[in-house]
Image (cartoon, rainbow, N blue to C red):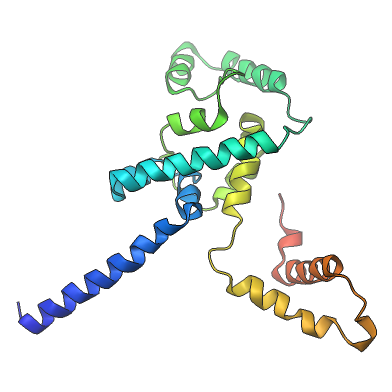
Length: 207
Protein backbone atom coordinates (compact mmCIF):
# COMPACT_ATOMS: atom_id res chain seq x y z
CA UNK A 1 0.00 0.00 0.00
CA UNK A 2 1.18 3.51 -0.75
CA UNK A 3 2.79 5.06 2.34
CA UNK A 4 0.89 8.35 2.04
CA UNK A 5 -2.41 6.48 1.76
CA UNK A 6 -1.53 4.30 4.74
CA UNK A 7 -0.73 7.39 6.85
CA UNK A 8 -4.08 8.97 5.94
CA UNK A 9 -5.95 5.81 6.90
CA UNK A 10 -4.15 5.66 10.26
CA UNK A 11 -4.95 9.32 10.97
CA UNK A 12 -8.59 8.75 10.00
CA UNK A 13 -8.83 5.74 12.31
CA UNK A 14 -7.32 7.76 15.15
CA UNK A 15 -9.87 10.54 14.62
CA UNK A 16 -12.75 8.06 14.44
CA UNK A 17 -11.63 6.46 17.69
CA UNK A 18 -11.41 9.88 19.34
CA UNK A 19 -15.00 10.76 18.50
CA UNK A 20 -16.26 7.26 19.25
CA UNK A 21 -14.87 7.46 22.78
CA UNK A 22 -16.87 10.65 23.32
CA UNK A 23 -20.05 8.58 23.08
CA UNK A 24 -19.23 7.03 26.44
CA UNK A 25 -18.75 10.37 28.19
CA UNK A 26 -22.50 10.43 28.87
CA UNK A 27 -24.40 7.37 30.11
CA UNK A 28 -27.53 8.45 28.21
CA UNK A 29 -26.22 7.08 24.90
CA UNK A 30 -25.48 3.62 26.28
CA UNK A 31 -28.71 3.62 28.29
CA UNK A 32 -30.68 4.32 25.11
CA UNK A 33 -28.98 1.36 23.41
CA UNK A 34 -29.72 -0.96 26.34
CA UNK A 35 -33.35 0.15 26.52
CA UNK A 36 -33.81 -0.55 22.79
CA UNK A 37 -35.61 -3.94 22.79
CA UNK A 38 -33.75 -5.09 19.66
CA UNK A 39 -30.32 -4.51 21.21
CA UNK A 40 -30.42 -4.64 25.02
CA UNK A 41 -26.99 -5.81 26.23
CA UNK A 42 -26.21 -7.85 23.12
CA UNK A 43 -25.12 -4.77 21.16
CA UNK A 44 -22.61 -3.68 23.78
CA UNK A 45 -21.28 -7.17 24.36
CA UNK A 46 -20.46 -7.49 20.67
CA UNK A 47 -19.22 -4.01 19.79
CA UNK A 48 -17.99 -2.35 23.00
CA UNK A 49 -15.08 -3.22 25.21
CA UNK A 50 -15.90 -5.27 28.30
CA UNK A 51 -15.14 -2.29 30.52
CA UNK A 52 -17.44 0.01 28.52
CA UNK A 53 -20.20 -2.61 28.51
CA UNK A 54 -19.96 -3.19 32.28
CA UNK A 55 -19.98 0.54 32.97
CA UNK A 56 -23.01 1.11 30.75
CA UNK A 57 -25.00 -1.58 32.56
CA UNK A 58 -23.88 -0.17 35.92
CA UNK A 59 -24.98 3.36 34.96
CA UNK A 60 -28.33 2.08 33.68
CA UNK A 61 -29.02 0.26 36.96
CA UNK A 62 -27.99 3.29 39.03
CA UNK A 63 -30.26 5.63 37.07
CA UNK A 64 -33.07 3.09 37.27
CA UNK A 65 -32.71 2.64 41.04
CA UNK A 66 -32.88 6.38 41.56
CA UNK A 67 -35.88 6.73 39.24
CA UNK A 68 -37.74 3.86 40.90
CA UNK A 69 -37.02 5.29 44.35
CA UNK A 70 -38.12 8.84 43.50
CA UNK A 71 -41.03 8.06 41.17
CA UNK A 72 -44.05 6.34 42.73
CA UNK A 73 -45.77 3.62 40.73
CA UNK A 74 -48.89 4.90 39.00
CA UNK A 75 -52.02 3.55 40.69
CA UNK A 76 -53.42 2.43 37.32
CA UNK A 77 -50.69 -0.20 37.16
CA UNK A 78 -51.45 -2.94 39.62
CA UNK A 79 -48.98 -5.82 40.04
CA UNK A 80 -51.87 -8.17 40.74
CA UNK A 81 -53.46 -7.27 37.41
CA UNK A 82 -50.13 -7.93 35.72
CA UNK A 83 -49.99 -11.38 37.30
CA UNK A 84 -53.60 -12.10 36.31
CA UNK A 85 -52.92 -10.99 32.75
CA UNK A 86 -49.83 -13.21 32.64
CA UNK A 87 -51.83 -16.16 33.95
CA UNK A 88 -54.47 -15.63 31.26
CA UNK A 89 -51.80 -15.63 28.56
CA UNK A 90 -50.26 -18.81 29.93
CA UNK A 91 -53.59 -20.65 30.00
CA UNK A 92 -54.03 -19.86 26.30
CA UNK A 93 -50.72 -21.55 25.43
CA UNK A 94 -50.18 -25.21 24.76
CA UNK A 95 -47.80 -27.19 26.95
CA UNK A 96 -44.80 -26.72 24.63
CA UNK A 97 -45.27 -22.95 24.30
CA UNK A 98 -45.82 -22.68 28.06
CA UNK A 99 -42.55 -24.46 28.74
CA UNK A 100 -40.70 -22.21 26.30
CA UNK A 101 -42.24 -19.12 27.89
CA UNK A 102 -41.21 -20.26 31.36
CA UNK A 103 -37.64 -20.97 30.24
CA UNK A 104 -37.33 -17.55 28.59
CA UNK A 105 -39.25 -15.70 31.29
CA UNK A 106 -41.52 -14.12 28.74
CA UNK A 107 -44.81 -13.79 30.56
CA UNK A 108 -44.52 -14.38 34.27
CA UNK A 109 -42.57 -11.94 36.38
CA UNK A 110 -42.78 -12.35 40.16
CA UNK A 111 -43.88 -9.17 41.88
CA UNK A 112 -40.67 -9.12 43.91
CA UNK A 113 -38.40 -9.30 40.86
CA UNK A 114 -36.91 -6.06 39.57
CA UNK A 115 -38.28 -4.98 36.19
CA UNK A 116 -34.90 -3.96 34.80
CA UNK A 117 -33.23 -7.20 35.90
CA UNK A 118 -36.00 -9.16 34.24
CA UNK A 119 -35.73 -7.07 31.06
CA UNK A 120 -31.94 -7.49 30.86
CA UNK A 121 -32.21 -11.24 31.47
CA UNK A 122 -34.26 -11.71 28.30
CA UNK A 123 -32.65 -12.24 24.93
CA UNK A 124 -32.84 -9.44 22.38
CA UNK A 125 -35.69 -9.59 19.93
CA UNK A 126 -34.75 -11.12 16.61
CA UNK A 127 -37.01 -8.84 14.59
CA UNK A 128 -35.88 -5.32 13.87
CA UNK A 129 -37.90 -2.83 15.90
CA UNK A 130 -37.78 0.48 14.06
CA UNK A 131 -39.44 2.59 16.73
CA UNK A 132 -38.46 1.58 20.29
CA UNK A 133 -40.59 4.35 21.82
CA UNK A 134 -43.68 2.98 20.09
CA UNK A 135 -42.77 -0.49 21.37
CA UNK A 136 -42.59 0.77 24.95
CA UNK A 137 -45.89 2.65 24.49
CA UNK A 138 -47.68 -0.54 23.48
CA UNK A 139 -50.26 -1.51 26.09
CA UNK A 140 -48.77 -5.00 26.45
CA UNK A 141 -45.40 -3.52 27.38
CA UNK A 142 -46.87 -0.94 29.76
CA UNK A 143 -48.67 -3.76 31.56
CA UNK A 144 -45.57 -5.90 31.70
CA UNK A 145 -43.13 -3.13 32.62
CA UNK A 146 -45.29 -0.50 34.40
CA UNK A 147 -42.39 1.62 35.71
CA UNK A 148 -39.63 0.57 33.33
CA UNK A 149 -41.70 1.52 30.28
CA UNK A 150 -42.04 5.11 31.53
CA UNK A 151 -38.35 5.21 32.43
CA UNK A 152 -37.39 3.94 28.96
CA UNK A 153 -39.63 6.46 27.19
CA UNK A 154 -38.08 9.29 29.20
CA UNK A 155 -34.57 8.20 28.17
CA UNK A 156 -35.36 7.44 24.53
CA UNK A 157 -37.23 10.75 24.09
CA UNK A 158 -34.11 12.82 24.81
CA UNK A 159 -32.96 14.43 21.52
CA UNK A 160 -29.58 13.24 20.29
CA UNK A 161 -28.67 16.84 19.42
CA UNK A 162 -29.73 20.16 20.91
CA UNK A 163 -30.10 21.86 17.52
CA UNK A 164 -33.86 21.34 17.23
CA UNK A 165 -34.75 22.37 20.81
CA UNK A 166 -32.62 25.49 20.40
CA UNK A 167 -34.30 26.26 17.10
CA UNK A 168 -37.76 25.79 18.63
CA UNK A 169 -37.13 28.12 21.53
CA UNK A 170 -35.37 30.65 19.33
CA UNK A 171 -38.83 31.20 17.89
CA UNK A 172 -39.77 32.72 21.23
CA UNK A 173 -38.48 36.09 20.04
CA UNK A 174 -41.29 36.13 17.47
CA UNK A 175 -43.86 35.10 20.07
CA UNK A 176 -43.00 37.81 22.58
CA UNK A 177 -43.89 41.18 21.09
CA UNK A 178 -44.31 44.52 22.82
CA UNK A 179 -47.87 43.57 23.74
CA UNK A 180 -46.79 40.20 25.23
CA UNK A 181 -43.83 41.14 27.40
CA UNK A 182 -45.61 39.89 30.52
CA UNK A 183 -45.72 36.29 29.32
CA UNK A 184 -44.19 34.00 31.93
CA UNK A 185 -41.42 31.48 31.22
CA UNK A 186 -43.71 28.47 31.71
CA UNK A 187 -46.36 29.93 29.41
CA UNK A 188 -43.78 30.66 26.71
CA UNK A 189 -42.45 27.12 27.00
CA UNK A 190 -45.92 25.64 26.56
CA UNK A 191 -46.68 27.87 23.57
CA UNK A 192 -43.43 27.03 21.76
CA UNK A 193 -43.76 23.31 22.43
CA UNK A 194 -47.35 23.23 21.21
CA UNK A 195 -46.44 25.15 18.05
CA UNK A 196 -43.71 22.60 17.27
CA UNK A 197 -46.05 19.66 17.99
CA UNK A 198 -48.65 21.09 15.60
CA UNK A 199 -46.10 21.67 12.83
CA UNK A 200 -44.54 18.22 13.23
CA UNK A 201 -47.91 16.44 13.33
CA UNK A 202 -47.09 14.67 16.57
CA UNK A 203 -50.49 15.58 18.02
CA UNK A 204 -52.13 13.53 15.27
CA UNK A 205 -50.03 10.46 16.11
CA UNK A 206 -51.73 7.57 17.87
CA UNK A 207 -50.10 6.73 21.19
